[in-house]
Image (cartoon, rainbow, N blue to C red; front, top):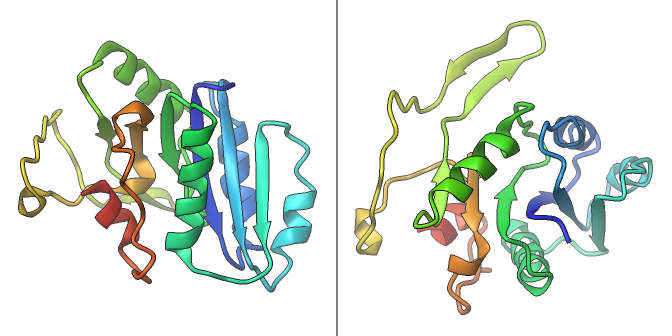
Length: 186
């Protein structure tokens, strides 16, 4: 079993999912598995996913779209049931920098008291490359949340979570159409 599970929900992502998966396959850190949840896509996403031959990528497909929260929950259950050490999230229209997993894995291994580590997110385009950072952390911050209201929004797509620190009863709220990732991280 690999050390890191990368959770990728996708719905009608035929134009973006391959780029996301390619950024994952080019990682300098190789000990990962991806759990792609194809949540009832009605476009050519299924055909695109069938082209992927990397054995580290597991695709779970549902015939009916049940929403991002459902897809994320199914992926979380897979991650927990298969005893991964860490979980990362990658949306079907996002990409990782090539050393993202290596950097975060090394940080988590050196900082065993840390449950979740996140970095800033950059906005890129084909012709400009990186042109904007959504939230710039100029220095490392240790954020300790004592209650729900203390929470500072952090990007889920650039986070790594120690799976053993996820409470057994924590689930994605299936009633949320948006923001289920932030609710989960909270």
